[in-house]
Image (cartoon, rainbow, N blue to C red; front, side):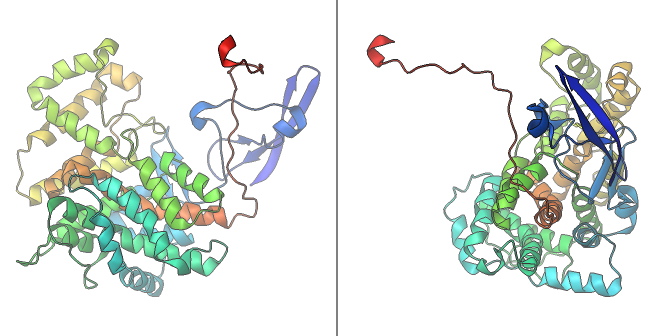
Length: 430
């Protein structure tokens, strides 16, 4: 990145020259780092919709084109040709691995899938009906009390160990949270299974009978994980970066990301989309629902459509739609009413002038809930699966930030609108 030109900001009797930085892809960026020091000014940008808070070489999104790149590779190519752990390697280290590198990485992750046996006791402190995300936030945060040899963020090797541990153990922790909610015994990981198959086995196997993971379901789960692996500076990733900027240990940072992801506007969106499709119930009810969605006074919003960044068809949604057909066909669900509603709702919305004008295209959440439900997961597990998938993105972003020599603790400023200074009044005089 290099300065190509300057922007001139004139206010009052002052004039500032602000460098304009040119990225590899995307719009130019005005460098305002010295705006306060030189001009005694802040910028006001609620939601940070026009502010770049960091430099990153991991993920790029072009919302207008509907484009998502991991380290420069289009998500569609990776989804069709790659695997989740190969994508993990790409996000962590910058390039696709060769055969030997991938085998070594797979082995390192596989041999860290078990959790400390004492962690099992943590689950007993939660009510049986606790949301799995509540359990995950607590247990992942507690990992810092068990893995003391990977807490020093200034040691590159300890950062590497923490990264592998988190990628390896999050599926185990999520599966344990699921089993605990069912009252079933925990199922230990099996090193003979691949990453996605191992997770499915830990969720659905029971000691009293054999459970064989169907390859098509494993492939679909692997693809779901891959599509959710990273998504630039979203709310949970920004939370991880902000927590990490203080020097917090990696387990605490990822726990913070999981907590942020839990919000219905972020990781809970696929659950909301599925629940809305169920509420519609049948294709013949779609026209009435569309009418209500257009009426601002109805309070009904079209879930699974539109995105904060994408103003075109979410590229992940196209891949997810293919997986939905494959999984439901495998499960023998040929006339699934929810899928029928989803497809018809998508067709109408893509042709309706109102939704086209607002650029409300299907997003990744629209079909992912249907797939996970068909696999047998309750809606409460949708967001934990998202957390497993996104963990590698959080870790890659965290590692990139820690290694940045310009790292500073995050400290957003504010536009203060409270009272001006005033003197204290004794209680009898108020």
